[in-house]
Every structure is written in C-alpha cells, then in structure tokens.
Amino acid sequence: MDNHKNNLIKDAAIIALSIVVAVLLIRTQALAIILTSTKELEIIGSFIAGMFFTSIFTTVPAIVTLGEIAQVNSVFLTAFFGGLGAVVGDLIIFRFVRDRFSEHLVALVATKSGKVRLKSLFRLKLFRWLTFLIGGFIIASPLPDELGISLLGFSKTKTSLFIPLSFLFNFFGILIIGLIARAIM
Picture 1 (cartoon, rainbow, N blue to C red):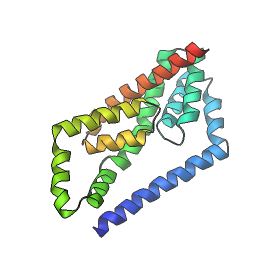
Picture 2 (tube, rainbow, N blue to C red):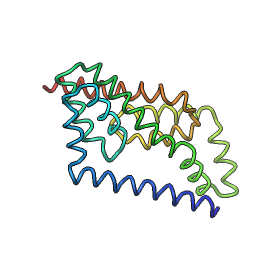
Picture 3 (cartoon, one colour):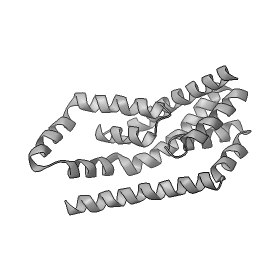
Picture 4 (cartoon, rainbow, N blue to C red):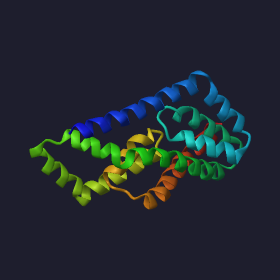
C-alpha cells in the first residue's frame, strides 16, 4: 500500500510539474508566440497546434490557432496534420497515464472486500468497451485528453490500437473545429 501511495505521489508530482510548465508557457506568452509564429506554415502550424490540443492547460490557445489555420487553408489538411500532432501529444500523456495512474488509483480505492468486486468490474467486457468509447469521445472533444487517456488505460488499450484511434478521434475533433471556424468566418 505504501508503494502505491509513493507512486501516486510521483504521478501527482509529474502532473503538478506539467501544470507549472503550462502556466509559465501561457503567462510568458511563449505558447502564443510559438503558435502564432507557425500559423502561416499550414502543415507545421497544424502539427504543433495539434500537439498542444491534447492538454487541458493548452487546449484553448490550440483550438483558436487551429480554427485560424482552417479559415485560410484546407480544413482537411489542418485536421490531418493537427491530428498527427495530437497523436504525439497523446502518446506522451499515454506513456505516463495508461497503466501507472489507473493501477495506483485502483490500489488506493480498493479495500480488501471491495477489491474483488472492483477487479471483477474492470474485467467485464462491457466496462472495457464503455470506458473505451467514453475515452474516445473525450479525446475527440475539446475536453482534456488526460481524462480520456486515463479511461483508455482502464480499458487496457494497447499502444498499437491507441495510435490510430487517437488520430481518428483527434482528426474528427479538429475537423469539427475547422468547420465551425469556417462557418463563423
């Protein structure tokens, strides 16, 4: 139990560090400079904005940038390269979150009597599919990908399946953002 607490504390420290870095990027305008400097370069700008599209702390500036890129360039190319960048961002999160966080959380929540019930719930195919679908919907939406990736970790999604799914979900999410941006224009 102490080992799970220590690992959960390490995971929380990583999350806290990412929050600090994101706040610094936003407060120093570094994120805005990065995103606006690449905006004119459709492919690179879409890719970089896609990487930032995945995190709760950088989603809003990335959505604005992707919308602006889609207004003056191909919506499909913006979504394609933004989706590729989002896969890179999601993979970074996935490597940290997939197994470690979900296992540590389950170990802390489960009591000896409840542990058996909790483990049997996680083994149900219906539970896996439900968490898989909800996680995918969250990844496609502007909601934070960290939550969706955690749910995919609960469903034990393999990396070889995660990559194409992350691309598809993010592609469609960015495509919708681009279409909305074009409709507003």
